[in-house]
Image (cartoon, rainbow, N blue to C red; front, side, top):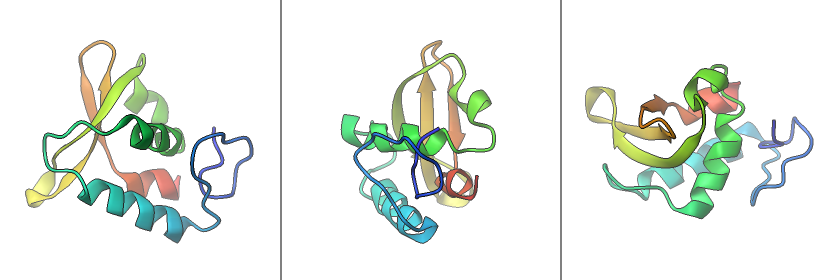
Length: 101
């Protein structure tokens, strides 16, 4: 697992956050820069992959591998990140759950 917000060692991605709140703010801003249906850029996908590795259900969410991330509709008219897997399936995930671990 990566060092996404300063609690685990070895993250080689583009961002390091010393506080969970900083990571939450960054990911929230990332989510809201995309429209529903957009594919996440390669640079943002690298950050999301590191974040998703910290999710309590990371293994299930990642499945056999991820081809890309997208933003789609979620509950109550909101939007969230989706992991799109190699096998064609997809799984939504909360960036807040990634930060909470």
